[in-house]
Length: 192
Image (cartoon, one colour):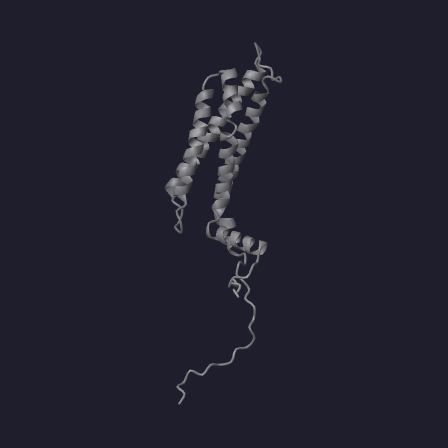
């Protein structure tokens, strides 16, 4: 007859998952701002079709360069972010400076892109009307605005990292061990 193997670790389910999640956040609180950076990148990169269609339809000065710069520096921001926060070391100030420079370039490029859309839609001679066929223009406009918002959220989260990092360290993530009662003192003196 086979004996069932009993796991030495008790099953804790969701509580254990949440505890491990907070332990990892305590070790690397910068992952919160990394999630915001990832969201900004995904919002922009997964919606490049309406942005490219808008660039082709409006065909205004520097729209293609703005689109390219926003995409390029969104990718490079990940590289700088990973280099700015090496494992178990202090943040690299040079990389943080480069990262904030990239954030500035991204927001600047997105702002110019939004201005070009606004001018094309509201110009006096031959304005571009947003209809069912050109609905991608308003979609591109909202995507670029969301991109700016998430880049700003990431920048603020990185600035406030020391504050919420200390708050996360105050969260109790220790495991409560059941009491085995009082143990008897073990005599280790030599017995004859």
